[in-house]
Amino acid sequence: MIQPLKIGLFGFGCVGQGLYDIIEKTKFKAELVKICVKNKDKERSISMNYFTFDKKELLEDEQINVIVELIDNAEEAYTIVKQALQNGKHV
Image (cartoon, rainbow, N blue to C red; front, side, top):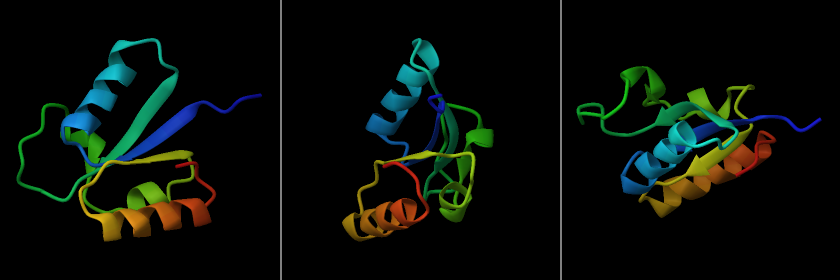
């Protein structure tokens, strides 16, 4: 049986918001579990319940099986992707 996609998203700029919209407004069979962002003070267009500022909440969450990385820091992106793969997540 195919596992449902449980997505952990890094970054919520234009592309991240677009991905959120696609998941929420189409029949795409995936759930956006958590979104990790760096700016705690930025106003968001969706519930703050989706957000965290700690990357471990996504990387160590066993229900999340897919990580989508959409951040603007190449070094941090490398670290995130490497850790996700080491934790057995799809990227």
